[in-house]
Image (cartoon, rainbow, N blue to C red; front, side, top):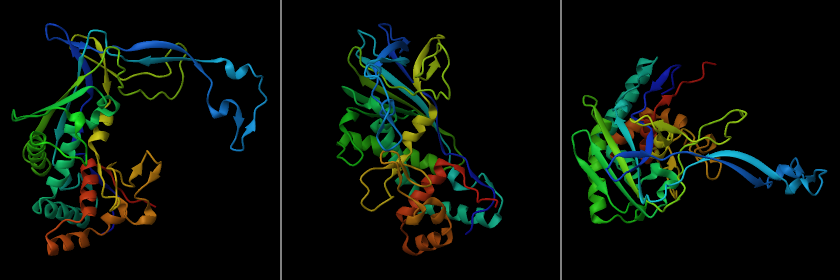
Length: 342
């Protein structure tokens, strides 16, 4: 199967912004505010004293490298007297991977739809659902904030089912889960399996984390992208969202939450030691390398070309190869998969 000139999948997981807050003595939501700070940071960068890649020294006075590097930044800290903070977001789930949203070739649409139908019949969505459920219950979407004194996660589904995990900071992707946490994982997996494979029903959930913190602990929300410096404005700005009382609280961008939920690809190698964020070329930001480089033959575009063979293999063996799990996770992520017009 060859890719067509127009091929588009709408993402199946749509996360909202995640917002931080704490509760006052009356149980009312209060914002975590942004602090603005002027710093006198020391100069420490390579380019301060050297040119290019050959360690050619700049002609500097000795005093220059001792001068302060003035910075104006935004930060966020837990207010004194607060021992618990919360972070919450909403998640909508659609069964959009069952067929393309836009496809300019009827035969390609038929093959991709048949791939999803075969995958659904063999219960492949359960594997993906369990991985998404793990990231939700592990608090992966909290990023650096997950490292706290105690972490509990609660999920409220659209049909009023409550699923919770306590001491989530003790759980890990490959580690042992206790009986209660395993039961919660199974329940959330069953819910997400239905949501990813059932196109006639609307699924959504609210996810909330309770973090036990110390007074003055630093909080790490999203940072705003700044393409240029503005006079009198911080060079590091934090993302915020307005609460119902018109006060602003720090937040995660929806894209950052979604990126954490998509960290499920450990099919990139048989000895993979960590899950990567789902990506067509298996981008590994930690090592700055593509784990699914085209030379390995395991990138999305080379795999999707063999759709007919994958369908035939699944029908014969009644099992799902790991590469098909990966392909379907990319389709769940969504995006434009057009072939070059050239």
